[in-house]
Length: 626
Image (cartoon, rainbow, N blue to C red; front, side):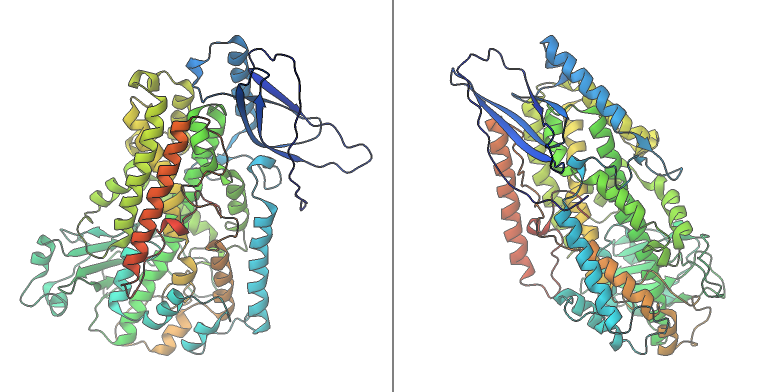
């Protein structure tokens, strides 16, 4: 799409004739004679009748030449509330057109369905602004140019030292990225990241060791509270497990003739008396054997560092493919396709969610083109493209409704009482604020459970989500139908939380935590150690990605975590779609609550050595933008 010169204007049309009962407004843009065609973006039409009544018709769409558009005004309504034959017919035709236009597609069997558009066929009103696209391209090109000028781009050499990796960019370092590069070796910082890093979604409280992880008291006693045992600490709720069994058996991509294996680690973590989460045992692969030893903090330093590097390699591959791409982008895209297919623009849920979903279809098409391309970031990981797809398909069964609802997820993982768990603390507060807002809006429009049950558009939305996102798996817990108001409130809360807060939690820290390879890397060039006492710092440098692999991933991560100049924060609704004053007041209250939470988080962070900023509402976008 070409760059547009944007001009804003207000047009006034006057008439003294009575308009009668105004049901629809038609818009049509004629051709530009002897001039290149252009598109107009209409925000809204406000009609003041000769009798003094003010009627509001929201639009917020691009209008092309010869295109005719019909707009409904007035308050938000559900289908069963329409009485006038013209409005009933208009709504019927609108939904038929939407279902014909927004088609489902499936690239990989076993993964959520997505939209059938190509990057160039996404409709104008759902495309990201060109200013945003250009901002993204500029960031990519600037990063690639910098590393090229430094002689890093294209270099297949190993890094000569850990210090050299700290100087990839001249200006892009942040306080947090510098902290990561200085503290990556420390066990408590390693453990901290499972709670407050970029992937705080996977550890669980451990009450019993898996049979394939034969950790003994003798192994870990030096790291436990004095005179305690592993069994006692598990009973007290101080032991946690990070288990990436879903990676087991997935082949590594071919790499320079080297036979590599994908780590599928088990990592035992301990909440020590100082209330710090530390790793106390690591097994890099699932099946115990002499060639797959359990590494301990008391082992030689580079052995222990290598074991942690392999854990973080598994974590980054899982984070990028599952926590980030599949469990925010892909599932939200499925929700959005069903949304556009099933809701009329006059429906209250459409008005509530459209701004959270606006760019999702465009982003989905771009993500599949860029991230899953043969030259994309996943192709540069140890899994490669084929392994990444296999991992996503394997973990589809783990995608449950409860796993997407933060309060349920935290309880299921047994993480209610861990201290200094800021992702949980901030996230639950945001969940509650969103829930109160959604409850107010939904209850304003649904006065009884029976109204929910007979809302055909609402029911059509959730039915397609079950079949196209959760692939018809009723054991996922996704509702087959909405039975009552509370179910609708919870589901919409989950949707808004996922595209705003959860996406922020797993997206915004990528550059800071994952650019420095010793802390987190998607590619490792040597097999995991099969014995203790045989490694050195040279081994670590030969295992970490080469210079070219490092800088290409760093450029990608910078763009993914970029805070764009036109970002709209959660709680802001710049499009005036609701005319109901009660709902407008709810939006103001929602925004005020988020501002208050932001102030609380900033005050807490001021006293922390490692601030947790990713769920500060001030830094949180209203939807998945990129």
